[in-house]
Length: 142
Image (cartoon, rainbow, N blue to C red; front, side):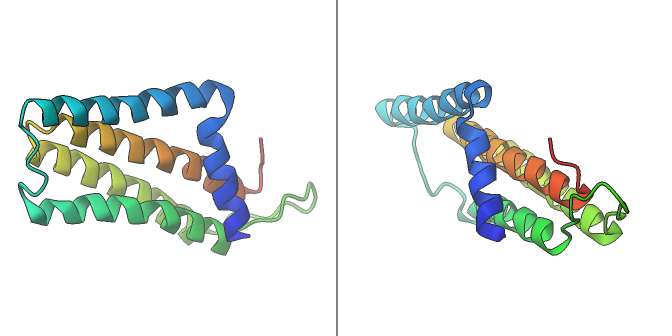
């Protein structure tokens, strides 16, 4: 079930209206890297401890899907099952943690334009996982 949810959340990124946003964020990361490399302002290891925030934000994507699999509610019309309270809370906590890590990393990595674009791209990936997780945890699929 985990791999199915991962496939669905990645398909969200290439679906027609959302694919345009994904492509523009990817182009933004690439153009920012080229621009900063051309100007000689690309110290990749400026603050190595802040790279843990980027790694933690990457980990939030599979964690969201794991919570979706663990707290899955079957989509049957009757009798309607209630979603697991702790699964909903932990899914929301993972999203808040990812946003907080992105905000803190962007704040600390001033002058690194590509980092802002990469953080937005990671949050966009998490949006796809969040839609699948919300549907799985509530049993209501779009």
